[in-house]
Length: 99
Image (cartoon, rainbow, N blue to C red; front, side, top):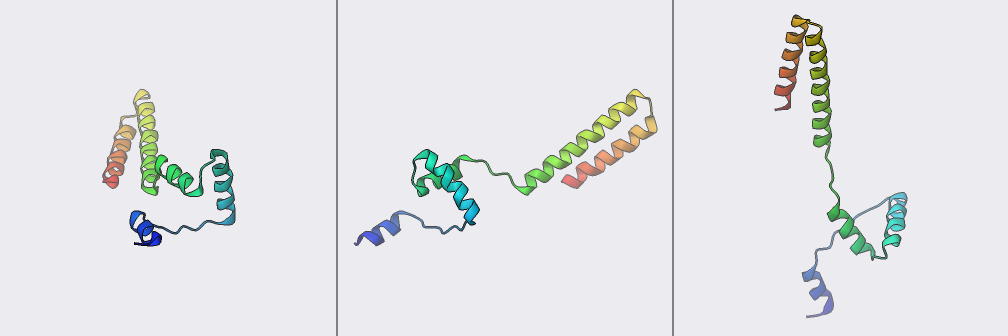
């Protein structure tokens, strides 16, 4: 078995593209670590949590619900019962929309 086929069976090869600016930024950071490019990419990609747009949307919706709760608390303290019930209905609709 020649070296190339032995090497190809041991690893999975993937191709990745960078813009020149992205590559320069990665190279600058990589140079500080004294790692090879492959080692640096493997370590950096496996050690970072990547958030998705879904997570960002959920955080946004939860923040909106928190704002609504603050408005309800203010209304309760001011004894605006009808406004409180209206806000509670809006919160219930928002929660159902998340499911």
